[in-house]
Image (cartoon, rainbow, N blue to C red; front, side, top):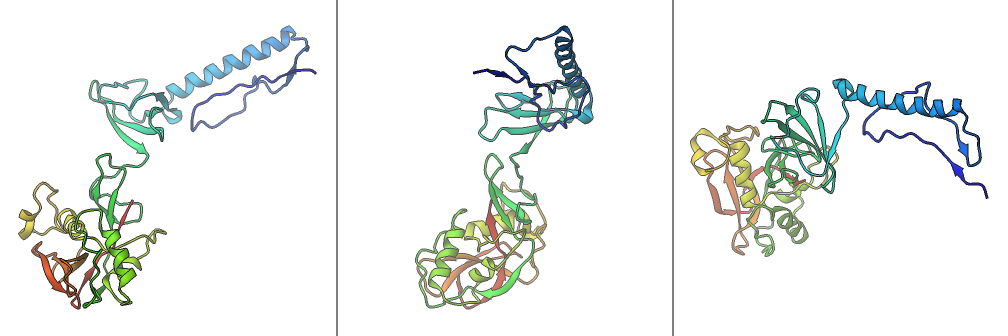
Length: 290
């Protein structure tokens, strides 16, 4: 049985548009074919032509291709000419092949910005169109808050103990909200108003926990009179456009199995109320994890 030899030229460089060249090999040769001098010249010219195109792409910023390394870049990776600002670095050692781009190619102080997977900083716009108020150490995950209020609402179920909605820490708001919706039948509750929020195709919004709400205030809703409550966090002035003049906002944290009370926070003073009756109508701002 005759074996087939298919000569294929591959340039394995991401994001490079393929352009036809006269010297490319398009023929399929089989074992036993006579490789004439003319055929060998065609092969040689095609290889040389590809080498030329690679050199051209590296030297031309508009056609720059990624460089692949088994580690992330650092400030000592000096990509000066012919590798200026805009050079792409792919870290093949990461599970997602993280991509970085050089934004400053100064000698011994190169600055790289991670482009993929996306990373976030406090105050950035999140994937759901909200404002990022909490991020993990690697910046790839966190919490975002909706850019606008939902309808003002009562916490709901004043005389019902939502025993598993007492989480206060960052990361507990979603669980609190699920428990409230499971055990509270009030259709106009704050938890329901938060989960009804929809933006950028995301349906997974919820009512923040006590500490999540405080983080929102400190990062995005802080007022000049309350900066002392947010030690160690950015010094901001209501960049989240909260209704700080008149509103306090509900958290999803019920307080100490007290069937009548839940935690809320003033966005005027930053004060968190530990025992506010559930039938009080307060502001609602939905959040989501990413």
